[in-house]
Length: 321
Ligand code: GDP
Ligand code: CA
Image (cartoon, rainbow, N blue to C red):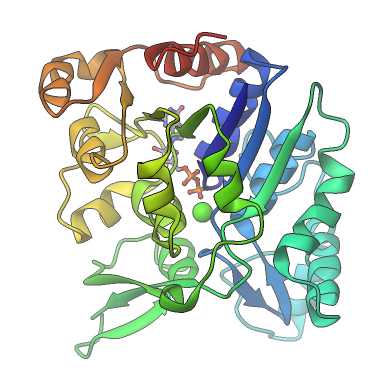
C-alpha cells in the first residue's frame, strides 16, 4: 500500500510512527511542513522536518516530543554568554550538527529536498519494510508570519517568535504565508499524491502545519483530484487541541475550535475523518457533509494506541491493513 501523509511536527510524527507500526509493509511518503523554518545564528533550522526525522529514526526526545534525546546545551550557553540573539529559541548541541549540515549543503547549492534526503539517510535508512521517505513541501522559502498589534501598530513577526517567545498569548490578527505565491512543490510531492493508494492527514496543526502544505501551488488540487481516499485525524478533542495552542490559530482564521470545525476546513478534500469518542456527538453532522466519520479514542498515549488510530483511519476509507 502506498500512503502519502501531510505532516507537521509533534502530532504528525507521533501519528506516523503508529502508522508505520500498523502497516509495516506500506510505502510511506511524508510531505513535511517547511513554513516553520527559521534562520537562527546563521543556521537553517527546519523544526517540523527534523521532528519527523528524529522521531521516526529513534533519535527524538521522547517526553518533549521534539529535539534530540540525550541533548546538551553547551553551544547555547556560550551564545548566551556573548549576548547573542535570539535567546527565546534554544538549539541543542546534537541538534546543531543537523543544522550545520543543512546550512552548509544549502550554501553549496543543494535544494532543501536533496539536503533532507541526505540527512534522512542517517535516520530513516534502518526503518523496517519498504520504508519511509520524507520530502519538504517545497524547495522554496516560505515562512509563516503572524500579524500582532501588541504595541498599537500591527507588525508581522515570525511564527516561531509568536509561538515560542509569546506562547501564542498575544492575539494574532492575521496569519500570512510569506513566499507561498511563488513556492513550487518539491520534486516528488505531486507524484507521491498522484500515486498514493491513501492520503492521510495526521493530527497536525490544521492552520500552520497542514495549511501551508496544502497552500503550495497545485497541492490542494492534486489531493482533491486524486483517486485515493483522503482520511484525516482530528487534533482537537472536546473543543481543545490535545497539545499546544492550535486553538489560537483556529480562532484567528474564524474556525470553530472543534473536531467538526477542523473537518470543515478540509471538507473539500476529505473522504474520512476520525474524531475522538468524546466528540461522538459530532459524527452525524460531519457525515451530513458527505464525509465518512467515526468516533474512536484519539489519544496517542503509546505506540499501540497510536497504531490502533492509524488502523481505524485506514479502515474508515476501505483500506484495512
Ligand atoms: P508541531 O508542528 O510540533 O506543532 O506539531 P503538529 O502540527 O504536527 O501537531 C500539533 C497538533 O498535534 C496539536 O494541534 C495537537 O492537538 C495534536 N496532538 C498532539 N498530541 C495528540 C494526540 O495524542 N491526539 C490527537 N488527536 N492530537 C494530538
Ligand atoms: Ca511545526
